[in-house]
Image 1 (cartoon, rainbow, N blue to C red):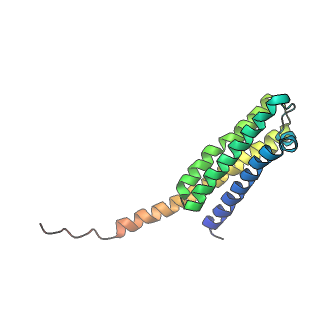
Image 2 (cartoon, rainbow, N blue to C red):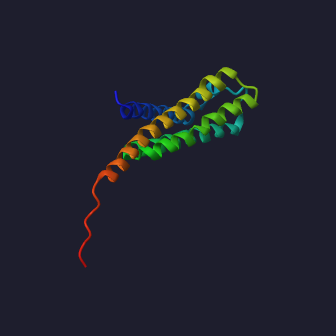
Image 3 (cartoon, rainbow, N blue to C red):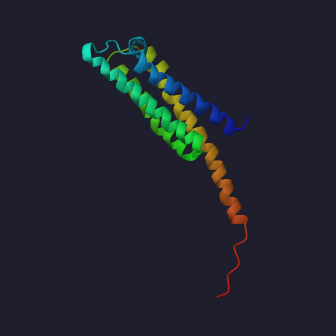
Length: 148
């Protein structure tokens, strides 16, 4: 399996997972929230923050999906690196609020690490393609000068 195919599978899995997660927080927040890792959840009108989390996840998934579908692979790699900040922030949030260490590291930390790894793999793939393209341009003869 080529690096490009592996990267496409990893990015697609990421898109599907993030969209599922976002939809879960919007459609079934009561069942999704406890798995996040925080010891206490907002009550009353505070549950609206779960919709914020769900909306953020859906937006992240759509950005990744659009870059994947349109073939902007180098931008996809950079965006994945930037989006890895969100689950890392979730990990810090859970730890700062004395939540579940297992959820902090096993869910959020691992997710962040997987997103970073996928982003770096895609940048590696696109870096090789970019170097090959530059080498091909350098090897091509320069166009002949046009008479005036």
